[in-house]
Image 1 (cartoon, rainbow over the protein chains, first blue to last red):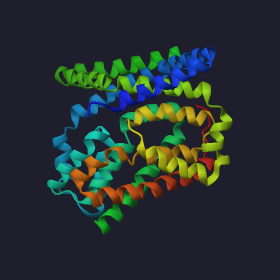
Image 2 (cartoon, rainbow over the protein chains, first blue to last red):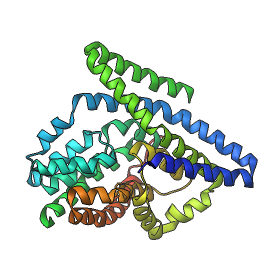
Image 3 (cartoon, rainbow over the protein chains, first blue to last red):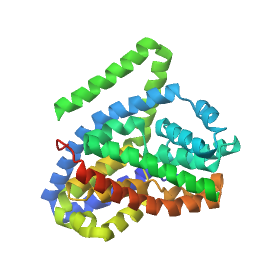
Image 4 (cartoon, each protein chain N blue to C red):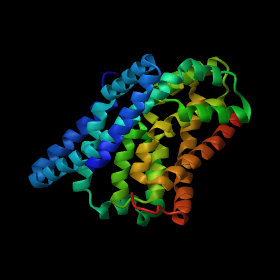
Length: 161
Length: 168
């Protein structure tokens, strides 16, 4: 399992640019200029985002999250799972193994679902990127709606699992 | 653009500076985590942004609106609620990609559905089954589709009535 997502995306980009260069060298140059411009827009924002990730991780350890989520259950548990997931900075790859640990500590399935979905879809530290690229209203609507619909999903999980 | 970039860099350095002053030890940890995140994600950032640049030049607004625009109707929504479930990456990676789709004419409904469906994370299914059981994994996977479509429709409805004041 040495092929990570980054390699896959780089390979796709390489193929696309190869096709592009064969078809039209001028357009290929335009695409590279477009790439440079986006890089210049996105990198400084990520600079901020990654530092914010560092700040949150330095203060909220996995042990802290575990102690908050370990005993949560019921409808209230879903909410706690969602709030913790919104702040937690766990990469999607790590989120399932970590959720497994939380289950063994006693977290119920509704809370786990809330935690997993918000950990993937809501990120306090990515808010600056979202506002910059899509606007304030978009960001508010997406995050509030996601939180609400994930809650409903959590209720379904609570009833079925 | 350069001015924007400088503002972000200065804000970042100020936040980090404050951290270091409050607690040098925590400041060091913050720096290490940020550096580690850079190293881990630089490949995917470059890869995705290259694809974004390619799309900007090669994919016309007409193509985009045919597949993901308002004109695409329920087919566009169905596409946006299913296909992204197979994609990898983190939230901050897919935002620039979706920004380009949006600028090229993809509807808000499709963008919202896209982000949500991407949260389905089908490539990680084996991990999910191993740690949480197949029942949990399958139920989550099946609920993500209506969740994504619902996100798309509801947010389009709300944002039509509450549009952005200034174009971002």
